[in-house]
Length: 146
Image 1 (cartoon, rainbow, N blue to C red):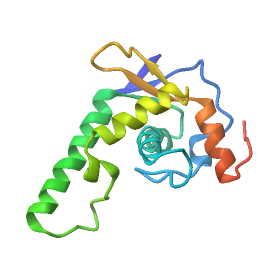
Image 2 (cartoon, rainbow, N blue to C red):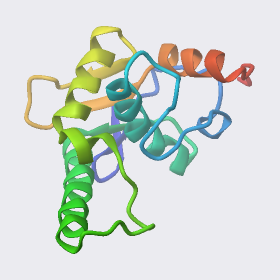
Image 3 (cartoon, one colour):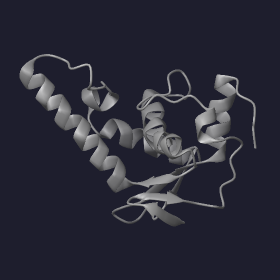
């Protein structure tokens, strides 16, 4: 595992069947792709970083936590003003809190659709697995490119 930027890592042992931008991901969702919305949002949050960099990467808990805190902070501001701004994306954490994504991560780890590194530390790292990407590709009708 090698850190490439703050809280973002590569794992050269993972071999993927396509490039990150070959699959379709919304920033916080993979609609009708995985078993639960929790899994879909957790996977999308992790996969989004790979898409942005167009290379497969894992992200630390600190990265995910900071991102989710920003989302919940924006939601509180929205509620105070009783309106929804088009710039703020509504996600599962708006309705259920951060535990929504934590549940998704736990489910994906148990199914081996995420690889967890340093899970017993305060800042574990979560990588998508080739199995997760293959499942998404199958659901989206995408052929392998690598």
